[in-house]
Length: 249
Image 1 (cartoon, rainbow, N blue to C red):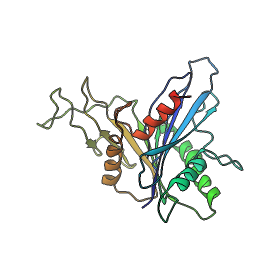
Image 2: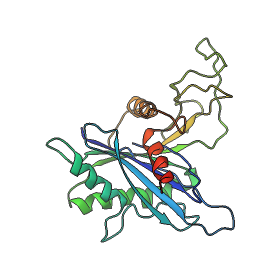
Image 3: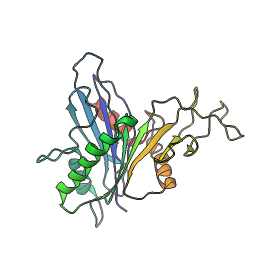
Image 4: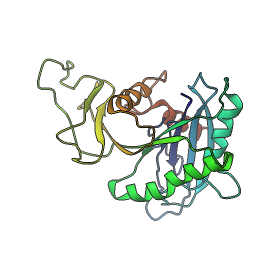
């Protein structure tokens, strides 16, 4: 298995909003103050030099203010951010196969009413970027949306609890309160030291890699522990690296 991880983040006015991502991909969007016409900045992070996949390459560009979908993932005739990062992966990969055959995407700051637009624009942008590299190159894509802005909280009922009353890190809830038909789950990846832990709500929109629930949940949890520090508790290191890149712009 050759895997490439991506991280996306958007910010305006230098205010960094962090999210999650693995090839794995991650994106997030932040806009300027209401009434301002400040452009947004998109920073994209992707893993490279397999098998040492926790080295990162970055790309950044501006896009119109209040634009909810990510522009520049694929630009007809010019490439785009996804193609650039896949080629960077190819240049630094060690092994007989230098193109990932699985891509996992984590996308932040998307509401349920935007899921169809994400599938129509951003997932298709990935497919077109892959075909730009080779006409028959079609890696499996798993596309996951991560949401932090919600009011759901969990409270332990047994002895498995932290001293402050929070649930244990690594707690997953994937039934009862989840969607009856779509695949979604809640994850509390890290210990909440102050206040009540806020779980991240994940929605699996595309799963061409046919990853099982345990595979996706374990990968998502493990990605939250691949960095030396956590700028955004509960989110993967790829998005944290995107935030650091924006700070240098």
